[in-house]
Image 1: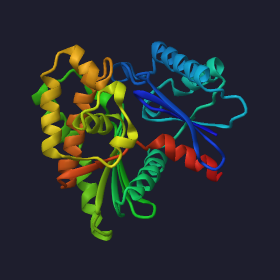
Image 2: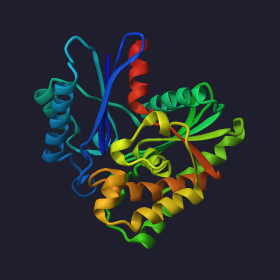
Image 3: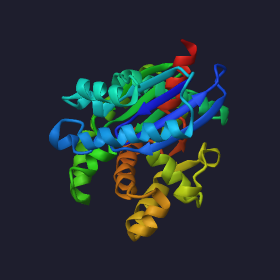
Image 4: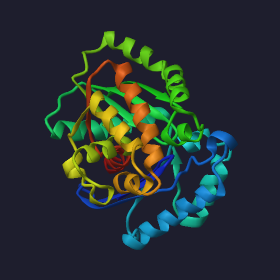
Length: 296
């Protein structure tokens, strides 16, 4: 089985046996949501990058003989040309992507993150945070996802608004207000014990905290790492002070500005949720899609 998560910034691949044992994994930055905030469509350049990434993945791992479960997320949900883009990708790559709802995305991601967190000794109930390229989610999880909020704000779409630091703070303060309603609803649930975060922003920040460069990233080391608000602030300030070559070394080529935008979003999530720290996990939608496909 091969699971593919086509996100708004990154495409992630995971192959596993029918018993769930990992065989291979890969990911590529494709910026699916490039210019989406201005044009409302997924551009031909983005589609070309996605097709190229899939071609590279097939060169690295033989897809033949494997069932494929491929999903697309917020960039496709927002795009006016979503159906045409899906058809183009199918024609160019042979892969049929399924556009999933924000609720399905949140639930699949939370299932995978909660499973990983429990393996590291963290206890339910959880809040799972997922900072994506065009949307960001928070999920309350206790044996299953019981409540979620999805906001159409991500690292690519925030970056492309070209806001200065003050404007970014004002924008996030206004746009993330829906998190307050999400938190207020906790009265009917047990108090969350763990706030877990997934996706490239928290994993990159955690890796830098641990002294890892982008090329030396190791999810086995990063998983379970805790980040406090103070640490996020210090990492944000450090990254802002670096020259581009130094920034690329830590965050990956041309990812620095996106990670900085994501750090601002992540910080606002943490403050709104009223916690001091989060636990970081590499597992996310890709793993959730695989788990769902294997059960089916």
